[in-house]
Amino acid sequence: MTLARLPRRPYLWAALALGLAALLATACARPPTPEGWAAPRPVTLNGGAVLVAHKAKLYSLPGTTDADLSGNANWQFPPKDKTTFPISEQAQQSLTASIDALDAVDDGTKTRLKKLVGDLMVSGPSKSALDADIKASAAPQAQRDKLTSAVDGAVAAESSALNKLQGFYGDIGVSADNKTAFLTSFKGIVFALDVATGHVRWLRDAGAGIVGGVAVDGDTIYFGTKGKRVYAVAAATGDPTWQFSTAGEVWATPTVDGDTIYVTSLDGSLYAIDKSGNKKWKFPGAGSGIASRPVVSDDAVYIGAFDNKLYSVKKSDGTENWSLKAGNWFWATPLLNNGVLYAPSLDGKVYAVDAKTGMSKWSQPFDTGTEVRSAPVMAGGGLIVAARSGEVYKLDPATGDPQQGGPVIAGTKILADLTTNGANTVYVLPMSATLFVVDASAQLAVGSVPLPQ
Image 1 (cartoon, rainbow, N blue to C red):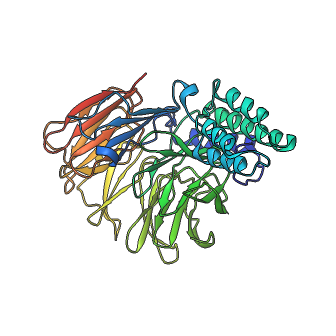
Image 2: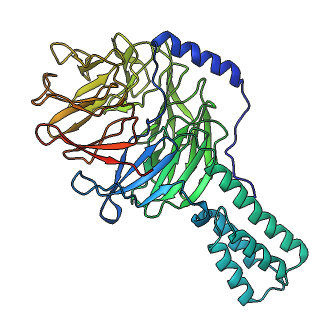
Image 3: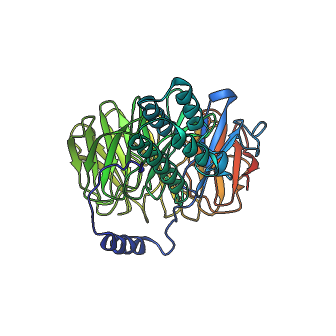
């Protein structure tokens, strides 16, 4: 059994890598690196937890606030000990179905084989026990060989997938019931994980690297790849529904709004795609690549681009409403709140503009003095902004003035988007293996939770 791959087409990796290197070189001397990009994701299951990615590991930390968060993880993915980590639920179901179909095998033997499948781990001696019972069964030789081969394939494919993750950079998607988390890896493997245990429900190879994350929309999830593809797959199984081709790599998580999926690309375009995978319109107006996630209002879509511009385009046809020029890339996803668009730039400034007109809402942008890569959030009545150098600010949304207390310092670079529990708690993930939990209810107060090592 081999790891299922989503369909793809071959393309010129070397040429794309050279083109990307040139693109990065033109923007700034020290372009952001992908490490730490995945934003912490709070979930409400079983009293609450925060999913925290660091490099090629994902942790479930119990609790949601500084007072109750613990560095003693509920689980870690991939696990330290793979001999205690079961194969995916989907692989178990497939092997169980094969056992049910065996000829000349009594019910007791089938029950024992199914139990061994339930105990099958991605590494260790569990496979040998299952192989031995398959060999000793009364099933025809051809069926025994086929089942043994399926076991071999499942264990080999899933063990290999866990060993080549490299990093989790994109947004973690979570199902509406908070029971399943969808995780993309830079090496192109997509995982559906049980939020309670961290066990794999299913996994798929997208055939190309993935920088962005997963958008969840009911029973379908959407993501894009460096292979110039956008995929719609079944949330329950990972089976592909359709794929859509773009003219450039897709680095941002898609945004779903009503019956439309909005996708940005390094070809400098914003695509609007219907839920059958057909293009509704394309905005090709950016002068360089786009790697920020689209933000949608009632009548417009907002995107930041590597040509140093922030754009508003019409939802109806993709024509431009307005654009705003900064001194460097707009990479962070802007925040729309009460008709105001808050957009950080790699020029170190945070811009506040009227979403309808593009006119400034502040007397001047707030200047952090260093690049801002992270998406801001609203919490505690303020705009929370993290500079790449590690400072976290609380700004007055109406004026852009820093609120009392000054910034708190995370100590190392911050590249991941900020997230919030929807009230006063803000999660900040810097490059160090530490989750900072900021209480924004008044003057910023910060606690920290070291990640397990």
